[in-house]
Length: 145
Image: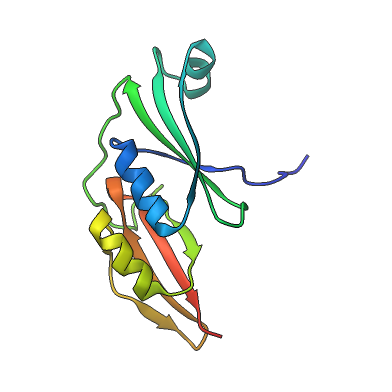
């Protein structure tokens, strides 16, 4: 059996509203919010007494989704503050955008910070990594040709 598709990427946050605002500003659309709890959630995630607020965000073309989760119980544990990208198990998600500079201008008021610098790869892409809420690292790519 093979994978049929990637359904979503799940990210735990401590401030769901701020994360939704950041990803909305990036261009994702809020698909819906819900609260999950009960034995099936506990069993699935391997925790006890889970109460979790969830917001599902989707890309404008509908091909990708983010599940943002804020745990009410048990309280989420903070990770290291702004770890570098070369930590084993560290993740980043890449988005293609029309104009990196314009996107960065919109994300800065929501806490978006360029990790290094905006670079150009050959004559094909402008690229950068952006650290968003909760230290989430996103890649942005602007196709030039």
